[in-house]
Length: 249
Image (cartoon, rainbow, N blue to C red; front, side):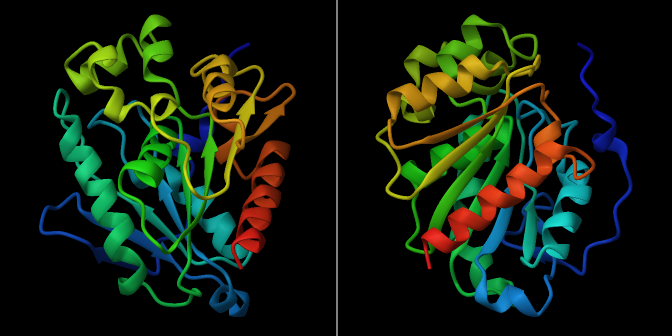
């Protein structure tokens, strides 16, 4: 099956605002405000994928962020530094974004739901345990790189895991969500069973280690379906986002 990645280059309406959470040019987030419902909903922070590489940025989350805002949530698409071989730069940025952005963005109820796709799913699952915040209500991980040792063994992204870490992932269990303690908030994974970029076995490995995780295996879906509003998979994502939002209220 050929992966349909057309969402990566599809246009979306411009953000309503761009907010900085640090001094670096990559420490920013594009904000799209929800409608009147948003004030009673969590802020949605989106962490983009791209195997932690600098050539992939938040721009491709535009259609997804627009659709989530249209469904009633305020959304912030987070950018972060991506420096091969220096993972802690990325991790520190994600932690800072979670800690500071809720106070800088209006029209939400003070809670946060993290959505991460692919490598962004790894980051969302990591920060929920390694640098948690009391505002965090749940994590929705979409086709996440949730097991770094498994991802390395499968040579995902042409060795992306080692390029990110600059070491064997076995030496950095502190960065590997599967090998951390389970988060103290609800976690849902949505993963297509036809994903060729991050096979569903990677998501299953995390769910097997952390039994409270809800794993939604989507029949026939590929890697980009969960972030593409034109797919039936995206409707499942909205349903799961709604469930996480209600669970923490």
